[in-house]
Length: 224
Image (cartoon, rainbow, N blue to C red):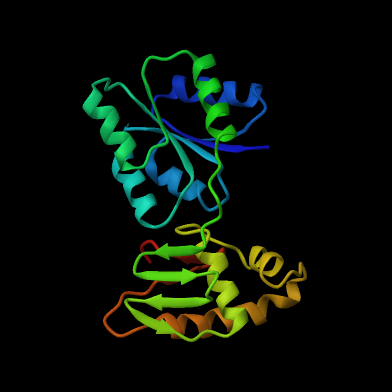
């Protein structure tokens, strides 16, 4: 089941859209501001329905930040602005589709289904987060132009984190996807590997890129 995040500050519209998504067979999550939206990205999302004007900032600026950090989640913009220039700005910022308010819910559902249906993005072979790139095919990592030598497990750990830029990844998720284990006994091993990886990613003159989210897990990219 596809999971869709709806970021909209108008309560009635937010409720109507999330209800329509649920009735259409999607799992939906509501966010009334960008702070709530950012928190929601701690879990995997297939598509974001994003309003442009939000109480704590611009949806376009937030989308631009997502794309710059390597987040490739599908985004459908909602806005009251209907000029051609506004639509072009939204699409060039990184939106995959653009709807002008007011709109019919059945058209929104049709566009959501169309976006998910034509999502033919191939898994990236080169991952980029901030000043760091990881080449999955050549198994190389560079930060700020410096090539880093990582053992296999740390390379796989970093690759998994970079596939979820800006998202908090729990130790349980790391154990299941990197170590292929579900046992809690791997917690200490993961912590040791993360600390070793953090030291290798720490280069003089560059800001920290691997963050610990106390009580929740770890995150690549974004502010500490």
